[in-house]
Figure 1 (cartoon, protein in one colour):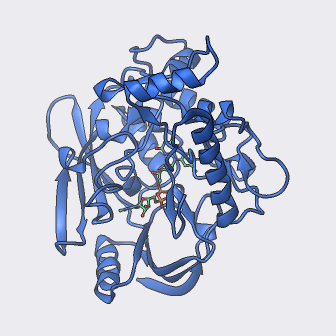
Figure 2 (cartoon, rainbow, N blue to C red):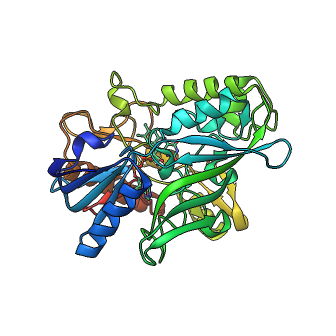
Length: 355
Ligand SMILES: Cc1cc2nc3c(=O)[nH]c(=O)nc-3n(C[C@H](O)[C@H](O)[C@H](O)COP(=O)(O)OP(=O)(O)OC[C@H]3O[C@@H](n4cnc5c(N)ncnc54)[C@H](O)[C@@H]3O)c2cc1C
């Protein structure tokens, strides 16, 4: 395993921000990943497990600990199993979009709407990656990993992963950071058609009704088209993709909070919304941000800005710093709070910084 010192992290993140890591280990086998994490834990050093760096905002000062970059590979279908279903084991270091393409090429349904999301497979359970009506929690049956607390390998069932909207036990709560994901096990459906389309905008582009199934390749193409229009597919030629994706999560409001929000907007304004579990209401953060006066491209001039294609993405056009980007994020959060009484939370993981 190669271990280097003082490695700049900016080049390892899609935002292109972040100072040096004190130590940086490139782990290409599960044994390397475990050894690198275990040794850093034994030295009492902070550990950052790094995938594709597409959900990270790292401080300009860098990371005073060990970064372990996961480079393990392997996708395989487990032979046997129930009719019509396929169990697929994916190493944490596999490129996520490659996994989606692999599944579609084999006529396996369930991941197609997650096309074009950057990063590695091992990070998908962390925030229960989702888009266009699909979330990985719908197809993950287990996650195999290294339990840093017990010092042993562990396998968590989907129920034990505690998946929720952009969260899981891996990301939040008392177990956060305890497990290093080594392998994700999916249960996919043998069907050349997509899972039922659950997202109105996607259904519209496909000329389908919500609930319809469409050919897997059509679902992928439509998702990629929609994502490109929003700067949500990495493209070196498109500066709007130099982001961490959605910087904020969509707030989930209780009925009482939603009523207060309704009273804060002009009479007759229909607030876009989706139903959320337990009678709650999910409101698009992009709409709140835009309505609070932070429109696409804000603030203009040098430094970080809101994407010109999507209000939810904060972009480093090339001359931003992590400090300036988090300052913009705070300004937006505070502006939305003052205008609507709704506090936005970061979806991106902040390392060495606080919102
Ligand atoms: C243009 C763009 C579009 C995006 N669109 C979406 C979207 O539609 N939906 C969505 O949900 N997300 C989206 N994202 C966010 C991001 O791509 C996902 O969260 C992705 O899963 C992060 O993967 P990664 O490998 O880059 O993780 P990283 O950014 O490297 O890490 C993210 C977090 O996961 C932890 N982590 C990573 N790997 C492991 C592991 N093996 N074990 C334990 N912890 C680990 C890290 O320590 C860190 O806390 C987008 C990002 C960008 C830049």
